[in-house]
Amino acid sequence: MVRHTPQHDSVTAKNARHVSVLLNEVLDALAPRQGGRYLDGTLGLAGHSSALMERAEGKAFLCGLDRDPQALERAAERLAPYGENCRLFALEYASFADALDALGWATIDGALLDIGVSSLQLDVTERGFSLHGDAPLDMRMDMGSLSPAGREPWTQSARTVVNMADVHTLRRIIETYGEDPQAPRIARAIVDARQKGPIETTGQLAQIVWHAYPVKWRSEARNHPATRTFQAIRMVVNDELGQLERFLDAILPRLSTGGRLAIITFHSLEDRIVKQRFRQWSTDCLCPPHLPRCVCGHHAEVALLTKKPIVPGRDEIVMNPRAGSAKLRVVEKLPPFEKELS
Image 1 (cartoon, one colour):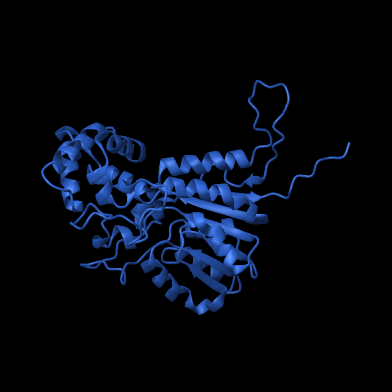
Image 2 (cartoon, one colour):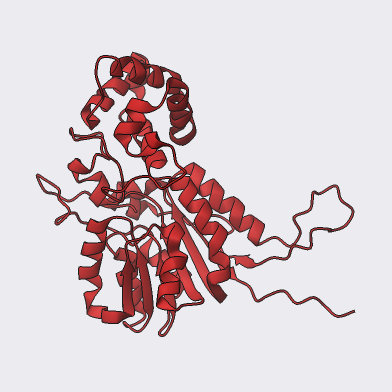
């Protein structure tokens, strides 16, 4: 979720503000209506959801999810005027089916994911997401939780990743999730630094990465050299790609015919996953091109409403620079395929 940084000396969970990216485009994509049921899997501070409810004149029904208890508290305040029409759950979005089942909703008319990091993470220093300032290394979106069963112990927090992962694992993380060509140097610098004592804070890690970068690269970098390393570690700690894959595996059966799914991504890896899945869903035959006829029996399940992703305009990026990498893709659920009688 892309947010403005508020003009305060100290940003806290209570005063963090936000500007929802591609707001009008999302509303046009979901086309909320009175009586419709909608899922916001990444509720944040409820910018998109409050606008959705307003467009439906308060007569739609919303299921909102967020892993962050501070975000849920703020969202509940914002959505309070809509009463029981908005039901909020402390859940990761991959577990959305649990919330729908609890509400007794078999299907929904629209779903939104705004995949990213909110002001409550980026701008509140003590959350340990930002390389600006000096705070305990954390980066967990669901504060205080532990990694679920089946995940490696070193993925518990940014601190455990930095201090427990071996050099080869660190290099793979930074190369894969940060797409940083200096990953080998950074991984080695982290491992060397922790020999002198554990790496405890964001400031320590930022300095280690800074000094690992070649001087020429530092002088030419558009962002702080540690930006990609912080992003990579955050994505591993919160299992961000795994979350997305599991959500996509489960969402189609819960969309009603004509229901729409809108996903905003900010990272090339996430966008690639969404693009490929949407293409697969919207294609009739998935057989290799060399086969003379279709043997897979697959039929398109959605209509692809965005041949190319929708991106923010110049004015939005000027007002909200963090929106610059946002991409919105949208599909609409088709009626079930009915085989023609011979």
